[in-house]
Image (cartoon, rainbow, N blue to C red; front, side, top):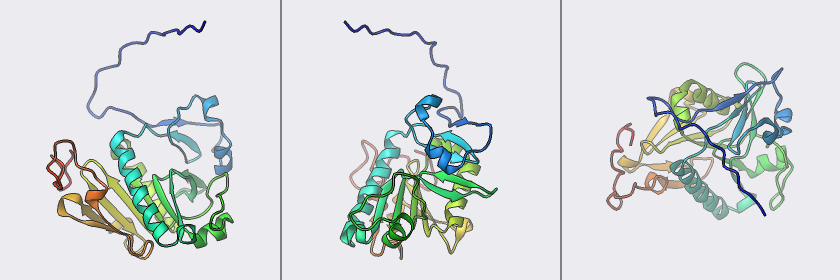
Length: 250
């Protein structure tokens, strides 16, 4: 007969300003390479099942994603997949959620980043990953530069703006054409491209009725921000989320 054992634990500490989930960093005797990172056994290191990245040779376990984070990322994924199918499916490109890519680090070496959503055009898939339409991707890091990367901003990102900016720098310096940063806290999307770099982003707002445009990367893609940021419970139909506005937190 199976027996369940319950272990006692101390009560959680009271909430403190600026508290909450934080990333866990796992250090090793020397910096890991992307190949060594991919060969790790997370359970042997006591890691959870959340997303992990390789940053400066250390393994960073990100905090869990909350409901609004996953919903925004999934809704964007669905919209991009539908558009890619309309333009030819795999013959046009692949949209992926949470796939990992190696990127050059500012201080040398390579990072392994796993953006929320990425789009890889078909030419890159064939040239760098050796996969044609209908064929599976390699069981490894996707050693290529996606044309589009989208990140949904988390509390951890807001509390560590310098680290998040480093990630954006890596994307753009590697040659990612479009970087979208979606913020569920104020229903905005910040758009970075190769022309403006980090210094000249465009900020789109749901409250202003703005649309997200795929430009030359995703020709014809145009999604209203209202389709990516669902209203909060109790919001008027088609209206802005209560408390959301020009740069304000909900």
